Image (tube, rainbow, N blue to C red; front, side):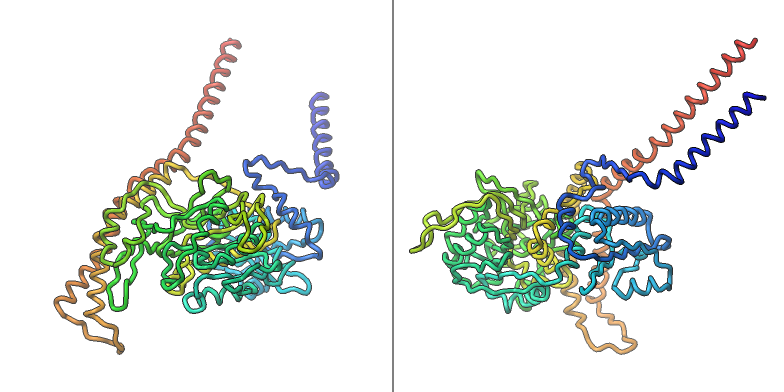
Length: 579
């Protein structure tokens, strides 16, 4: 009796001490967190912390996250918690200059009304951010997307930077092509986002006030302008350059400047001036000329998200980019630069002589004979590294200036037609790609140095199988796609658009009915081919899911079985000892 009472009193005292510790002392202890992840994804980077040190006045962040939205997936709910953790890390690191408000807006509430008023997306329930600062306009992140998780820290840092620096950045534009007519729409978008200073083609020096420079088709610029560009880049100017072996916008441009090749080599990169990139997988249909039927153009490439680097801010929110008659970039021999691809061809691509694209009748034969080496070619890339002057003796009559730089930073795109109104339209992300890149180049160094945090690497075997399936589908469906293009063209000619009434008579023309049947049947055959090509990939994915899901229950059953046998053995031993 006494021992039971002492045991009970001991448990009571321990329980009271435990409660007292949690209620009184635990809240006063400092919060300690350890980040054991390989990429330190749960810790703010030094660059983000440096950006927060530049804050001069408080700002408010309103995080809207609908917790119980029926249309929100579990993956999106998990990502919402991840975003909240990162926002709390920003608030803590800002030392009182960021006030974070976490809001779970109920349906038809005032919070939901405010969220919609500020333009947040509630398609799958609110998961967005609004930032405000006294005396400045509000900034928003319409919706956080799980596919952008690797750039989450950059996304939030960008909003904080915009709240502190609302003025538009100044960008210089120097072009060897007439862009006002051929690329007027994209130029208009750039002028909306930035203060654009247009520089003369024969400029002798880039103004020091310009920290970011766009150069289009420098092959067509005089040596004086090339020297000005080089010196500006060596001084630290951020550069976005578009150069093209065959520019469809500049058919009447002046002959190529031979000094451009030396300038590229001095920057550590190269691009063959007489080679065009063709790609069987990403080839797009195009009209060679007025009144001519659409054909499959092997050099007019529709680059999907798989052709982009998703962890780079240039690909932010893009589904596709269109390029036409582009070249390919690579590092120059003995280059010490770092080349990070932004846009890539597929493995069904090759570099061919530019002269072979003189007529549209050769397109089909070029597609058929293109050798698929399995190599992906770089269409656009970031280039960082040391650089040297391509004008060691200076320019005619001028003494030499800067001869080298320890680090230059630029984005090079091996295509100028990406800017053209005929190529860049609402169905692709050409304009967004350019704006994303310019915004990043014009940002302060602290924001530029915030790199992506890669959460997980894809299985290389699975990626390779997907590429093989895409190649097989492309090869087998090529003839069907050509027939479908021709059938659609013939059907449109026999069935022209006209003013419609409420009801119309059905055209019983025999040829039209045959074409209509074929244009409906061919997509079914294409779908069947695609399903057959991707069947091994889907089977492998199901096996992977099984390997990931099945072993854990089996392991738990095994542990339970072993525990049962162990307990049974102990009982049998106890009974044997008793008897």
